[in-house]
Length: 483
Image (cartoon, rainbow, N blue to C red; front, side, top):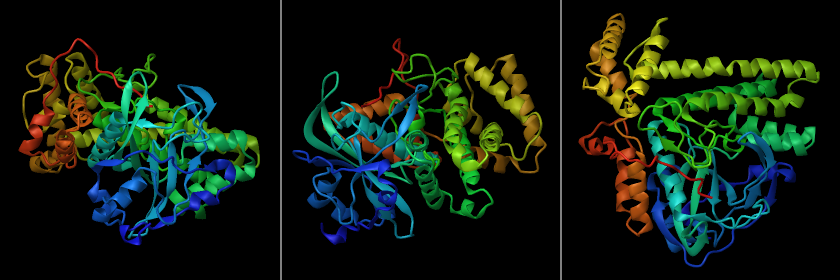
């Protein structure tokens, strides 16, 4: 392929034992058409955006051609899916390689939906247009919110149908990630690999994501602790934004601490710890309020996989793993409470801050208040869904008194709140509106939505209409896995 596009690929993952992947090329499609392209991300990655939008670039996004330096492969991994352990792998994804950015960074470039792989388990390996556009919207919204996430570089229509309950338009997403190393990758190594293969994987993760940990006394314990800290921070950020991942299986949890695999995800409107939008989560395992606990459960599975590396004495290794996992709760609540203080314009910390936050959330749940807009109303001194009630009046007085005891001015507190409470999130009805239009060939609605989501803390007049709530409906909102 022509060199002026800017491809600068390396293939360090392919140097791992071959147990962890299968060399595999994407299957070409009939008539690829570029429908979404992330020019800002392309520039960050060192690409010539205009060249990448040509037929030559589109052919790569479609899997019809390979860029110079590519070593296409499908990764092997396992995972606990809704608590049940199983062998998995990239059933509909192919890693092209790792782009080395102009700043020296390293990111995976992966095609999602390019056909069957050895891990497809009966699936067709393809993806439908709607779910790929949905991932594009949500992942870019998460990036704008400052939440660690994979990114979306492009979406192409394949010109071929895919068949689920009905016939749908086929599409391929080009996904960018710090890496695609998952908790499930380590579970796979621990269950089906040798100790040396597990060690090779851990060494690779350390070098790629935790280089500072390599100089410690116990580098593998440092890896475990590093992953725990990043996942605790990530899930705290989810909670602070009202984000519900929907399918927190261990194969959907990254070692890098990025959000990955946007299937049945959504953002809350009404605050409800029991909120579930995924059609497949009938028991509410991955409800909003359960996400912190599930994060701990998933990390315990990671710790189990790491035990052979933590200490040569297995009893001591188990003790080290348990101690590390026990620290997750403190990491999570520290990040969450710090974030909640910021959302309320509170600097520093006092003993009663947690109770103050919990009282507000309790009122929000009782009054079915919108999560995002309640904090916006507090930010700009507007009436809330609870205003006028004795309970809220008493809480508001406590809140004002708490802020009066800090050294920072009211102006500084207001600025902190503006920078901590987004003016806009990808409201479910707005996302569905954009997807419906796009599937009919109109991408302007989606592009306008992406524009306002790119800078959610700008608080512009344009964003105000996107903060409006949907019309009441008797049908609860549901999302689907998108496979």
